[in-house]
Length: 183
Image 1: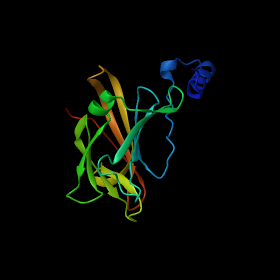
Image 2: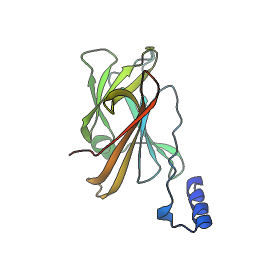
Image 3: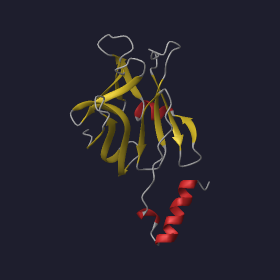
Image 4: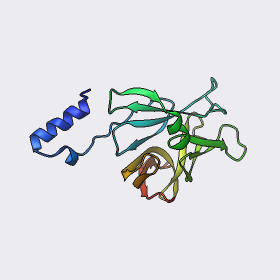
């Protein structure tokens, strides 16, 4: 299928005489709704993995599954798709547990990287939930994770860096940090 993204890359290649590998990918920003928490994108393609609050009728997180995770397949036709079993259990899924025994607050960690801890907590006004993590030494609201891949295998990709982008809950300023994940 010839998508808008591929069409724009083709036009750039034709106009600039550049090779396809030298054209910078444009990563779409997924739509935001009341349940949006954060998303993950990888250098491999423009698809996005979306993390949304899975809430009960009273607006609190579902204690059995507080976060819904799914793909937006921008590289194909922008449809949504559930994570596969392998993706959920070994890569992009989350482990969660209650935070200090508090109701409606959770500690989160990726199944593939437990060294970065995140927290699903109510925001300051208490009407919404957000995921918070340490970005540049300060607890910040996580908005995006970008993973720069450089080869490797299906089970052991080579990750050049991971970039976290979020906002400072006090000033609302954008904050970001790059790190190389340690195994």
